[in-house]
Image 1: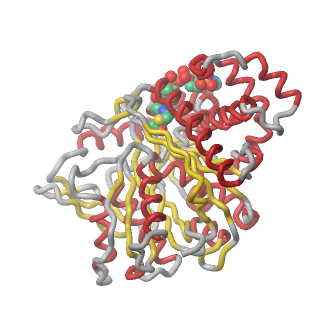
Image 2 (image 1 turned 90 degrees about the horizontal axis):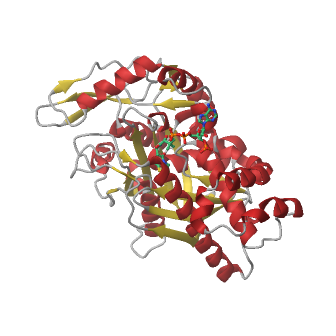
Image 3 (image 1 turned 135 degrees about the vertical axis):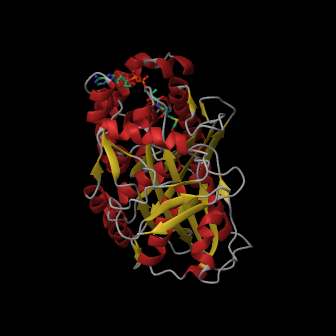
Length: 448
Ligand code: ACO
C-alpha cells in the first residue's frame, strides 16, 4: 500500500466547560495567571453522564456515519487512553458493541497506555499494520479518549476532556513520512497515577515541564539525524510548514517551539539571522541543565521565534486553548485545529508532530499533506469536524458548579450500584451518555 496515513478524522468534546478567567478569580490566583501565564482560555470537563467510553462511542459512531464507512470495513481498532475505568477490560471492547451489531467481530487491537502517549502508540500500531504483511485490506481506526482532571491546586486549570477518531489506510490526504521518527524514552516520576482508588495523578509540575523540553530536544536531534541520512541535507524548522505539539497548556507550546529555534541556533542553521544570533549569543555557554532553567533564555528565544511561531504553530493552538489538556487526544486535537484553520491550503505542506507522555515516552514524526479525494479530503475533514459549531454550542458552568461536578465524580470513580441523573439536556443528538453502573460494576449507556 502507498501513502498510508490518516484518511478521515472526527472530534468530540463535552459541551460542559468553565472559563479560565472565572476559574482564576475563583481560585484566588493573580489575574492573568491561567489565561496569560498558562495561555488557556477555557476548559471542558465530563459531568456524571459522560466518561471516556461514552465520548469514544460518540466519536466512533459519528466518524462512521459522516464518512459513510461500513463498520465491516474496519479490520483494526486501537484505543489510546490513560483514564483507567477497568484494569483488565479494554475500552476497545466497549466499542465492539458498535461493530458486533453489524456482524463484524473480526477486529484486532486493544488499548495502549502511557500517559498522553497512548494515542500515538495506537496510531503507530494502525499505520504499521496497514504497511505490514498481515494487513487484510481493511481500514484501521484509532481512538484517543481521555478525561484529564487534577486535585485542587496549581494543576487543576490544566485539565480537559475529548475523544478523537482517525481512520487509517492507503492513499491518504495526511501521509506519514514513516522513515522520519525520532523517539526518546526513559524512566522518570514526573506525572503518574499510582493511587488506583483516585482518578487524579501525582504530578511534579516543574519536573514534568523540564522532562517535556528535554524529550523534545532529544527527539528533534534524532529526527534531524534521520532526515539528514535520508535526504542528504540538514533539517531545520524552515523545512516544515507547521509544528504541532502535545499541549498540556499553551505556554509550554510557546516554550517548545522557541526551544527548537534555540536548537537550530546551536546547530548553526542558516535561517537564523544576524539579529537573532546576537540576541542568543550570551546563552551559548550554558550547560544543558542550565539552559532548561534559564528564564532569560526562554524570553530571548520566544522573542526571536515569535514571527515563526505565529506562522507555523499558532494555527494548531485553537482547540487545546479552548478545551484544555485532552491527554492522548491533545496532540491530535491540535492537528485538528490546523485542519480547521487552514484546510485545503495545506496541500503540499509538511507538518512535524511532537508527542509526549509522562513517565516518559516521546516521539517526533511528520506528515506530508495533500488535498485527497472526497470524502477523504482535507476540506471535507474540516467540514465534518465542525470545530466552530462545536465550540459555539457549549454551555458555561460557574467555577462552583465545575468543582461540585468534580466532587461528585470523585465519589463515582470506582463505585458500583448507582444510576446517573440521565440528564442529557446539554448534549447534542447522537451523543452517548452513562445511565447506570450496576452491582457487578457493569456500565450502561444510552444514545440521545
Ligand atoms: N499574569 C501572567 N502570567 C502569570 C501570572 C499573571 N498574573 N502569574 C503567573 N504567571 C505565569 C508564570 O510566570 C508562569 O509562566 P512562565 O513559566 O513563563 O514563567 C506561568 O504563569 C505559570 O505559573 P507558575 O507559578 O509556574 O505555575 P504553577 O507552578 O502554579 O503551576 C504547572 C503550573 C506546573 C504547569 C501546573 O499547572 C501543573 O502542574 N500542571 C500539570 C502538569 C503538566 O501539565 N505538565 C506538562 C507536561 S506533562 C502532561 O502533559 C500532563
